[in-house]
Amino acid sequence: MAAAAEKTPMMVVVGIDDSEHSYYAIQWVISNFLSVHGTFKLAIIHAQPSPAYAVGLSGTVGFFGAGTADALPYVESDLTKISSRVIDKAKELCSANSVKDVVYEVIEGDPRNILPEAVEKYHADVLVVGSHGYGAIKRAVLGSVSDHCAHHAHCSVMIVKNPKPKH
Amino acid sequence: MAEQENGATAEQTAAKMKAEEEGMRVMVAIDESDGSLYALSWTLDHFMAASSTLAQPRSLIVFHAQQPFQQFVVPAGQGVFVSASVTDSMRKAQEENSAHVLAKAIKVCEERNVIAEALVMDGEPKEMICQAVQQKSVDLVVVGSRGLGKFKRAFLGSVSDYVAHHAKCPVVIVKPPKEDH
Image (spheres, rainbow over the protein chains, first blue to last red):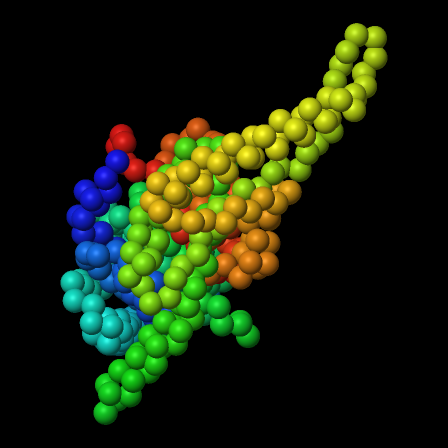
């Protein structure tokens, strides 16, 4: 059986956040996976947390208390800045590796929903995520985004673990 | 200026990663399910396909865990006993099964001109897979998504779930090709 039919470009969606795990994942995929498969398309998706989520961590009643609503605009602009930075870094990684066919997207919301949706939208063959999801604060609350994606994305899932020792 | 710095760092990371890529060791965990054979084919196509064009060769390990053999009680007539010969034949059947599973897998590899190492360990598959990753310095482990379960695609098998959490290297969970939707 000829595998020659396999030349349709492979669609790879990479979910990233503002963490070293994500940039490592991008680099790993480029070096180890895309280098093998002849033609591919890449979509790098950054799920930007919604401000209310970032501030309130929905459920920690009383911790931020009054004035939370006032903080929202500042949080929003911070988050937007962070997102730009994340995408810029992703762009640098791709251009440093001469990766061309890339789409970058920032979507606001919960990564656990956003990433499986992105898989559907882009008809991804593979979803790539870093290993510990989304940043120091949320790691405790969310459990594992990568775990959720492994369960719910309708395509193969690649979980790239950063071998750096944790501290 | 900042951009140049970041660019250099990115290139350094890339170079480092290429160095690490020397002889990338890929391990695919196999059981009797079709899903794991598909995971193997997937790995061959996407990670090993152009192996010859890569600077560093990649090696493939086909891994199978034999479930811990449990003595079981055979009711027979007046009493209940475990016969040594039953135990032996069960073990033999298990080993034959493992050999059969691995032979199938090796054949799939050969069809694509890939030489793979076969590895069998005794124990709980999920634990053995993670152990093998450590022992054999595996750089990437590939598992099917469901193994022998007959659930819908959304369900993730316990082995793949465990490996996703506990393996100390990148993990790929290969889902079967879309049939129905």
